[in-house]
Image (cartoon, rainbow, N blue to C red; front, top):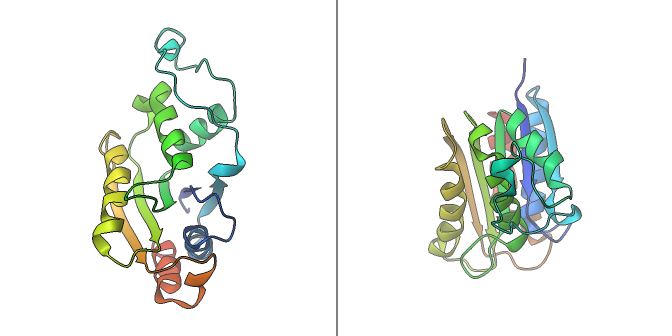
Amino acid sequence: MGKRVLILSGSPRKGGNSDLLCDEFMKGALESGNEVEKIRVSEKKIGYCRACYYCTSHGGECAVKDDMSEIMQKIIDCDVIVLASPVYFYSIDAQLKTLIDRTVARWTEVKNKEFYYIAAAADKEQSSLECTVQCMRGYADCVEGAEEKGVICAGGFYEPGAIKNSEYMKTAYDMGKRV
């Protein structure tokens, strides 16, 4: 039986470079018999965490009523989490960061996950991408039993779709295939 894979694509651009890498990862993971769902975070209504801690006195229910409760359950239920983001100023984008922050309501229920990280940037310097991956690792560090399984740091791609003919597409496919 395959694994339940949840891809969280932070790219605000459908067909953006990190989003395309997610598609290739998904293709490989599906071909290996896994159940895969890709969520384009920018297409969901997810408000910011207000640090009101309503969740602590309401069984993990968040005071903010939006799409996050459904996504949170998927995060809890999956076996594999793929975090993907374009790189803006050496960090993950606001869409993915907002989602991660909102997991605070039920973060202790997120356990034993395999993590894959995908970052794409216009900057060719790997150090620029590594800062972004460190942000993703920061989330995984809070997940009991988290295991890092793969990382893609694709630099030098600015225009949407520029990554299509690069070796990173095969890398993403192969990584998904190994899930």
